[in-house]
Image (cartoon, rainbow over all chains, first blue to last red):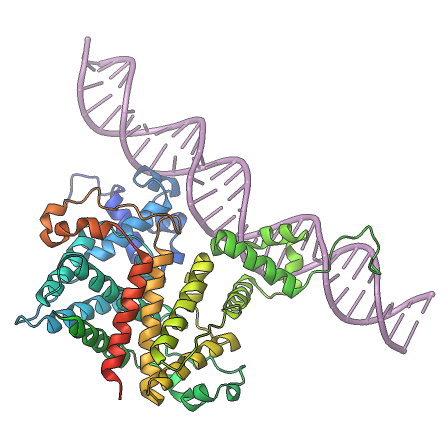
Length: 214
Length: 214
DNA sequence: ACCCTCCTACGTACGCCGTACGTCGCAGGG
DNA sequence: CCCTGCGACGTACGGCGTACGTAGGAGGGT
C-alpha cells in the first residue's frame, strides 16, 4: 500500500515514464506509430500533459533513441586476438540491430553524443589499438568498419518488406534476359542469407585490416 | 501556338508531370516536405485531381524514387584493371548520393526492382567478373561492397546536422576524460573529411578483394 | 489561519495531413 | 441529338503536433 488513496491508480507523469512508453511503442510498432496523443492515451494522461516533461516530439524521440542505445550489451571474449574482439564487437552491434529493427534506422541516422555512444567508440578504439592501429589511423579504420556495419545492417534490417519478413523476389516486371550476368545468378540475387552475408563481409573487412597491420 | 485556347495555360495533369514535381520537391526540401496538397498547389491543380493518376502517396514516392535512380550516370574508364572500374563505379554512386542527399536515405531503405536498379547490378557484376569472381562469390563481394557504400554514404549524407552542414562537435555534455583512448583522438573524432574517408575505406575494400583474388 | 505563488494536468483550437466520396462539366461515340 | 465515361474538383472525416489559456493543488511566508 501507498500513501496515495486507493482511488487514484494514476502514477504521476514523469519524463522517464514517457520515454519508457515511447521506447515500448517504437520497438513494437516503429517510430511512425509514435504520436503524442497515442502516447498520452497509453499513459492514461491528457495529450498536452506530456509537454510539461518534454519540449516536443523530436526530442522525445531523441531521448528514446538514447535509451535504446544505452542498453547495448557489452560483449566478452577471452584472449587478446584483436580479430576475435572485432568479431565479437561487430556481432554485438548486429545483435542490437536485430533486437530493435525498427529503432535501428532511427539510431543510424542520428548523430550520437551520449555517454553510451562513447562507451561503444572507446571499446572499438581499444580493439584497433590491440591490432596495432593508433590515433588517426585507428579512427579511420573504425569509421570504415562502422560504415560496413551500418550498411550491412541497414540492408538486413531496414529494407526487408514489412520489416523482417522473408525477402520476396522483386524481379517480376523486369526483363532479366537483358542483363546476362544478373540472369546467371538470378537465384542468388533473389535470396538472402543474412547470417552468412554478415560473416562473409566481416571477414572481408578483417582481411583488409590485416593487410594494413603494422 | 497550340490548338488549346490561349486562355488556358493549364497543361493537363499527367502522371509524369506529378512525379516530376515530386522529384523536384524531394530534391529541394526532402521527402518529408512532400504532401499531396502542396504538390497539387505547385501544379496549379486541385488536391484530389492527383488521385486520378496515382493511387496514393506511397506509390507516388516510389515512382519518384525510381525516377531519381534512373538518372544515375554511367561512368567511364579506359583499360581493364578491375580496381579502376570498381573505384569509378563507387565514385559514381557517391556522386549520385551527394547530388540527391535528401533522396538517398529514401532510395537506400527501399528495395529496388526497376530496370535502373538492374543496370547498376549488372555493371557491378561485370566489374567483379573482371576481377575473376563469378557466380555466388561475385554476388557476395558485390553485396559487401554495397554495404560499405551504403554505410559510408549514409554517414556522409544523412547524419550531418541539417543535412550537409559542417559537422559540429557533439561532445559538449559528456565527460570525455572517462574514455582515455577517445580523449586522445578527440580532435579526429570531431572532424570529418568525407573525401578522404571515402577513398580510405574504398581502398580498404579493394585490398580485401585482392586478398581473395583467385 | 490565511494568502500568494508556482507547478502540473488538462481542454480547446488552429493549421496541417491523407484520402473516401460525390458532383460537375466536357469530349467523343451512338 | 443524346448518352456515356472520364478527369477535375470540393467537401468532409479522422488524425497529427502544438500554442495557449485555465484550473487545481501543494508549499511557503506572514
